[in-house]
Amino acid sequence: MQQGLATSADGELILKLYELRTEAVMRQARAWITGEFWPTTAEEFFVVLNDFGSQKSCYLRQVVTYWEMAASLVLHGSLSADLFVDCNPEPFFILAKLAHILPAIHEKLPTYFSKTLQLIEISQPAAARYELARKNVAARLEARKAS
Image (cartoon, rainbow, N blue to C red; front, side, top):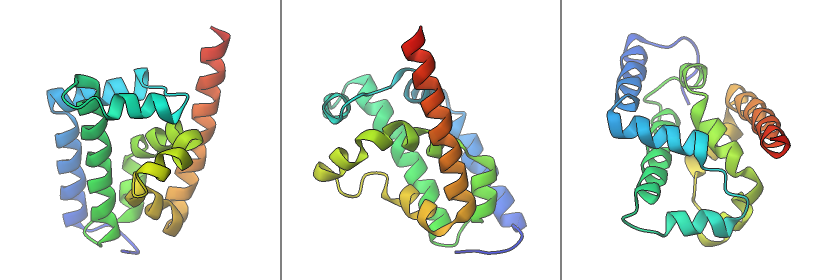
């Protein structure tokens, strides 16, 4: 994994990733997965995931595979890990939303979100970002329960 300062190529790639995130359907998918999708069980998760052709299933697959692709770029040395983590809290937030059901998801899909998890294992900044996201998710869940 790349260490040290990000390069100009890293900057160009991070801007391209940002540009891809702003595409209209991707923006809708990201809004749904970050704001509306709060599965409480793996069964709820799989109902959405396995409803092939439905908008929500497409959104879920689009966003997760996007972030997994981006994490793969980091893991293969094409993008600075520190720059990626600094610029992208969203994959860690989505993973944190699924953390409580991830073991059950992995029973059926052992590699689900594996690239982001691998990044968290080998990068201290990614691990710290993920822990912050877990706290954020816990606070949001408490707020949702209260309302």
